[in-house]
Amino acid sequence: MKKKEVVLMNYDRDLTSNEIADRSGASPGYVREVLRAHYLQARRPPSHRKGSGRHKEEKIRKLSDGILTSQQIAKRLGYSKKYVQKIMLKLDLPRRRRGSAIGELNGSWKGGRIVDLDGYALVTPSYQKFSKSYYFGGERRDGRILEHRLIVAQILGRPLTDQEIVDHIDGLRLHNSPSNLRLFSNNAEHLKTTTTGKRHFVSDAGMEVLRYPRKSQKYLQPVDRYHRMKVSGDARLIQILLLSLKLGTSSPYLLGTNRHLKKTGISDFSHSNLKRELNALYQKWELNPCQ
Image (cartoon, rainbow, N blue to C red; front, side):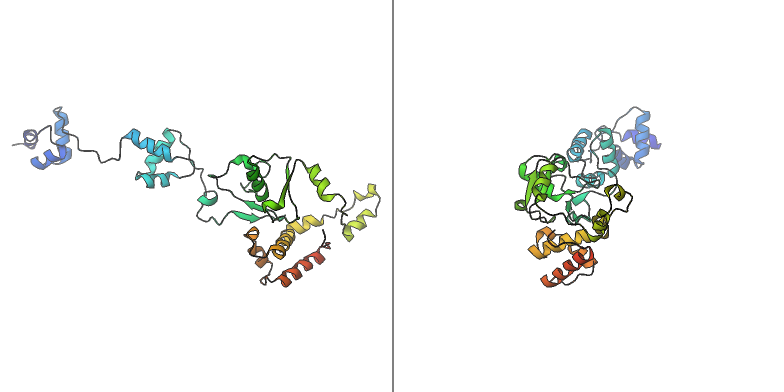
């Protein structure tokens, strides 16, 4: 008896092609070929897929928040990465941009708080917790924002305008305690409150320039002491030392600053040594300690 006839003899529409193949001694592929030639249909095997196509798409849609990667979604649902990517493209679902993850989503995340060259604390806030509107007027190109502006915006429950100025009452730029922050509606009010009655300190080099007539001063080399302090990192170091002397090096407002002290060779964090280092910086830049 021919193999094809054996397959047809064992055909039963309640059997799957694999079961007919076992009875006939033929391969499942050959059985399916014979059945197709005779317009016969075997019972379909039970599906091992996790849900229907529409059910799968709905699961992927719920997890596509623009934060999880396609690989993370695929791992959670037990689907292949390619299938998840295909559905995300098909439904135009939010996808995380290429490159390293931002903020706490990155495996190298260390808190997101740094101190810039001016001595201000910058933070990378959690995108799940904060609305970007709170950053208005304080966001940098790298996505970090000024910590003192974010704190005041959270207290007020509204975004700050780009005209509003947040000032540190004690003059210490890292001291971001809510009780040490005050808000001015514009910079004119800020300057009026913080500079009225205070003598403007001018360095010896600056005094030399001022001795020339005003018309001649524009031809002289400008004395930009602060810019040189900032580029060298000393402006930041002075702010760190000032707050360390006031609150102690363990203060939470000094988070992420120890590396700057160690980078300059400061390993002794005693009060007397920090005071000595601060005075050395004042002498180096001809600064008035009362500034």
